[in-house]
Image (cartoon, rainbow, N blue to C red; front, top):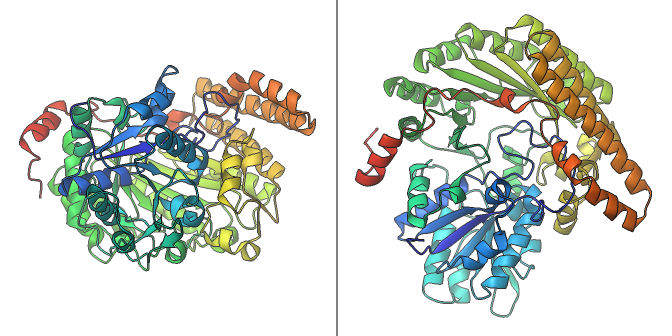
Length: 579
């Protein structure tokens, strides 16, 4: 270690001791870059680190989940014991699946560094902050989607010694304990409406690797070194009203204090994209539909892409239909462009009940126009577990996917996955389950800690619907995944080897789920423990690639993974002006 950090940010796996436990995770991560331990840390780590550096504080990111995945010999506890932050540890509990791992990691930090404060933040932390502050391992909970400034204020207070109650009471978005041990909840007022104070600064992470002598600790997810996809955040909050999403506009208004969607200025988004394109040839994922923002926002971003001649694969999101002119503009601006859209179902009534107003014609029109203008790939995502959705409706969605494959060429990619492991706390459907036809099975944070470590993802699901039990949700997920995989093969989207690989894994997962069901029905704790241990390898193998193959969700890296000369130059002499 060449520099001693002021703050160490730790990213835990979903279940801390996942290498020992037997868990059939199911297809909860098949359509995202990370594995079921969700080793990808939130982008907030990078913005917090950048903001704190401007204040004179050094931050180190340690991706424990990745390190534990990468080596069976890696001892996370020993590493935590060796870390020596000057001021604090931070643990993210952004995604609720980390309910077990985040707490266990914080406990280890407290065990080995009892006098060092531990803070926690993220979406799940915001929702469950009153419960989390009662855990001995957490000293502070940072709430909301913009904690850079509150963390900075807290670091300044900690730098002066043990903060007074008056100092802590002045920090927005903070939940804490006063000197009498009573929980205090400060107002959630820090929710900036313009995102112009920090950026998507990945170069800072390269610098961090040099400062602290550990490249492995900063790697975002398991195969990032060979597949360096990066995300450019355009907003915080959302204009959409999707019923199942904890990040939808009405949801974050209620529990995270965000009254309106905050956008990063378009010229800064352009700068972010240009910097990334200078450092890597990997795909650039623009998070958020550019059409959500004010008129002219998308044009500014697209003009910038053309001006900087960005040659990477660029991925755009669509939250609604779009006019033909939009696809023409993108085609003129980015030579390698792609799209993602999540209609979730073929049934327009179900889609509408879930908060999405566009029609199947809008979906078809978007695919048609994008491909006609040269899109390299168009991904459509469907979901299982929606309001009004029955098992037969799920399978009808798969057949509609087959019809779309008949209509369009191989550039159209289709996926289906379950709403799992959890329906988001804070989402409209979670907060108003009767209105949307859900039955919520867990409410308190402790229940989620147990659920994520349950023997299978069936026991971990936090909901049923009026139309599907947990048994049915699991069964139809594997049926739909198997049928869609077969259709892809029959229609020339998959080669036989890939088709058989996925089909065999689905079959293995179905058999294993049945075996777990029989085992758990026995009610014999000793038998369950013994047989569960025996099934570990099989469960691990049946927890990935069970609704699609990993290469299906990827875009090509166009050239060498990284532009090492440009990275080295910018580290040594400062970043090139790309405004």
